Length: 104
Image 1 (cartoon, rainbow, N blue to C red):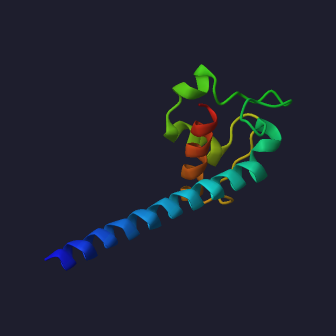
Image 2 (cartoon, rainbow, N blue to C red):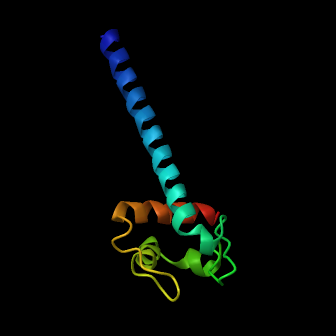
Image 3 (cartoon, rainbow, N blue to C red):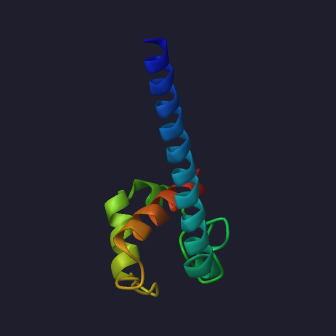
């Protein structure tokens, strides 16, 4: 019985480690995507750039839902280009989460 409990505990620990590594990899991918696609206009810190882009920490951006932000990334808005077909749905979702992190 103790051996079964130990194996179960090790399995749970292993799954936790895999989850942690996967989460970290997703965050790194989102950061790389942001750096290559967004930072040139929105700034490395998301505070807005020389092009008059919005600060991700602004009340206006914080009030938008994740779906609204994803739609802006997908379809574009104003001077911002569309990334439809250039980024996968999962990449856009991860990018929205990354942007939310910049706003904190």
